[in-house]
Amino acid sequence: MSQLFNNYLDGFLTYLQIEKHYSSYTVQFYRYDIEEFFKFTAEQNLNSLEDIEYLDVRLYLTDLYERKMSRAAVARRLSSLRSFYRFLSKENVVAVNPFSFVQPPKEAKRLPSFFYEEEMEKLFAECEGSDKPLAVRDRALLELLYATGIRVSECSGIKLSDIDFDLSVLLVRGKGNKERYVPFGYFAHEAAQEYIATARSFLVKDTEPHPFLFVNHRGKPLTPRGIRYVLNKLMEKASLTRKIHPHMLRHTFATHLLNNGADLRTVQELLGHEHLSSTQVYTHVTKEHLRKTYLSHHPRA
Image 1 (cartoon, helix red, strand yellow):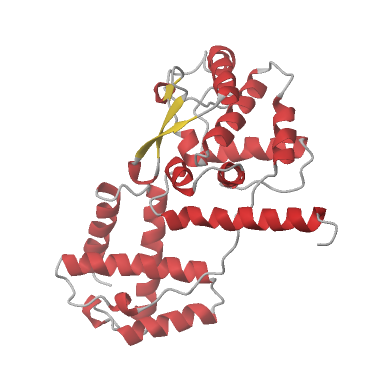
Image 2 (cartoon, rainbow, N blue to C red):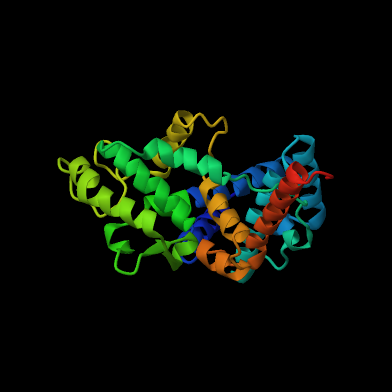
């Protein structure tokens, strides 16, 4: 594509960062998806943005499926390209968005994995009984993640000023910099206060001052990758065979709330979901949990 195309692409990516508040990581995916499509169109001798038609999009989809690309990956590419052409339409660069006529492939529904309460007890037990700074930090980290259901990326961004211990409420900055308040209970309250008073002050004593709550062994802010590493180590110590993934404690938080009678709208607000449909998946988890419990315990199941 021409320099003009590169200018439009740069303008679109800037729009995503400035107007939509997308992370640099997400923007990189958009760039990759769009550039991959236009490499394909160049091979088809389609060298202008206005040349792309619905049939060209269908041909591209056929190519993706022949390369055994997953439905989730195909859906993401379509979403990226549809957004790009929507931007071009608003800028009066193209008259028609050829991607608006294409339906994304339906994804196979997979229920989110979560920890049972007995497994959570094993994880918490691994954090007890030690006053070493990193052990105290790990206890506060686990308690806060389970108490609030926040994302790992949100957790790494928590600042000391975001915690209100008087009200036991946490200010969370979610996707698109949207803010929400999430309450937390007694155990998280006690663990966080102990961590701040003892372990954090010890870990950051030789580093440049910074406002972030959770820190690594060098006193620097703990990254999402670092949090996942900590959680996986706790899993190993607790002899739990599963590997933890970034949202597993979040899924556990939502599932346990619903299992214990919380209403769906409240869970939606606590999780920071924009649409209720995103939260409804957890009702399927709780139904499956009830079914397995019934089959395991009813004498004539």
